[in-house]
Image 1 (cartoon, one colour):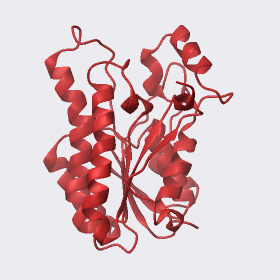
Image 2 (tube, helix red, strand yellow):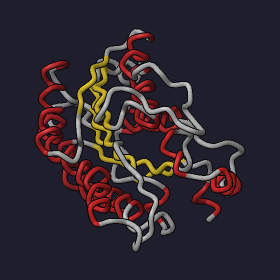
Image 3 (cartoon, one colour):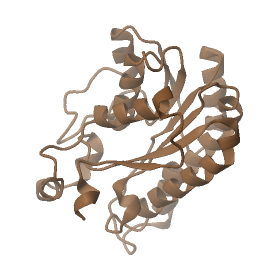
Length: 257
């Protein structure tokens, strides 16, 4: 098992990509802290319509260890509490996956300043807080890993005035942190998903979804487990000499555009 007995925190883990990452980590032997603002999974209009059990329940079904910790990643005290709760539960931290994210569809004239702040708080500030307060614990691990979930939108416009800039900043923060902690043998990488079948796609129309399908060269959309398997690789010993990378997991979406 590639991650046997390693302790992982995954944020935004009750649904979607975060849930998929947790399940793949558990299958690889990791003990998982499921962090989210709520434990109940979101049910989508187009995807994840039938999800009812919690992420921790699914991990327990396959014989894994998991604990839910309610966390608002934009709140400093909550993130400090998450770190402490993880150490209390499992005694260490080896892997941090900053996955929590929100999307608000609007252009610069429609998006309120408070919504811009909220999106940046979750999508960027949250990554920084997990990085800042997680590094001291990761420095004690023999295989410290930070994996930040960015997006293909990090590399182009078209997704609004907040989401693409936040994800571009996550990629840059990943690179900067990779340099900062390299002397401690902590690796820091980002994954940039394309269209993944989760409830986060609910804001789209069927026509927009079909357009995304046409722009994805591989003949299907991504699934949460596709991101989970990429995270498992980056968290494993097989990726010990990969750091500062931003890996598209997008079915070839960026290759075409």
